[in-house]
Length: 343
Image (tube, rainbow, N blue to C red; front, side, top):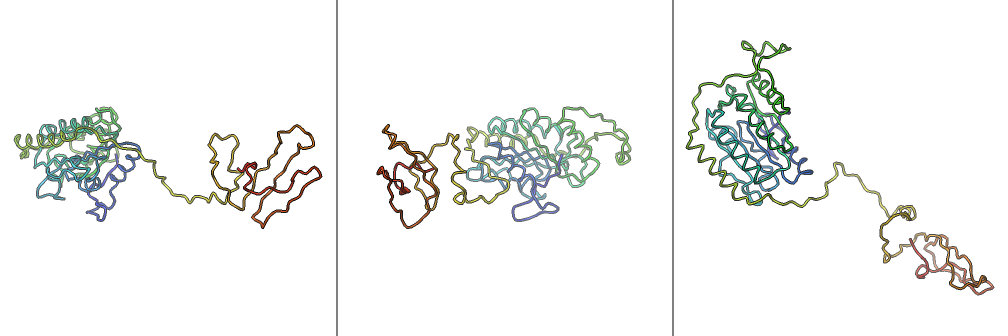
């Protein structure tokens, strides 16, 4: 699982975030998938990612975050996207103390509707651990299992899934969380009892993977949660179907200077076995070379049957006309003579 930086903007860095790796990852995914879904369960609003895709219908962003007097101060439920991206930005503003039950009262129906309507080709899930109970900078009350239930739920859709880390300021719990969620992603149940390892003493006195949530007050009333859920589901209902996208040729990762084909040998470029159509109307550029050719007259008179060999035609002043004793012209033929096949 990679740590990611969600709050970086195009022209600005914030705190320790100086490059928005999630935006770069989504741009890469868009080269292979028509639509990409971004889900953020970090306690902070994913403002940098939202801003990057605020006007497109190819990326939907869904952020579950603390809203109010809290960094970065954005992520109002009324922020829904703009232009072609209208209704493709979903913000789930939450208050202090939200627990597992309240969190999934919103998460599961909203994400289910998103997957039904948007039908992404790939999902990016940012698993910031600062939404866990006991985080030094956070104010939510999620257990590690409640947090990991988001991973398990996203995995159930059987859509390519990119898992990323994020915030988290109680380091022991960050390690616990991402260890357990790695197991969930792999379909492996990790034992609660922690084995001996180099940092074993950091996890005392219980030396267990899971920690119990606190008894802090949940300020998210059922009425507030219901209003948020209904509002967001209503927004999603306005998206009648997944947007259609016409794929374009992928841009090369490295642009290389192309050689000037006009300087190449025309004979070398032509492959007689190729099935490519020949442009008969293409004009010959002088100087050039005319392919050697044998012209056989229709007459069966052996006197008149001879080879006319055409060598290199240079851009010169003109041609002298010469005839042999049979009266057949054997001088180089002018370029515009239609019996000469130019390739």
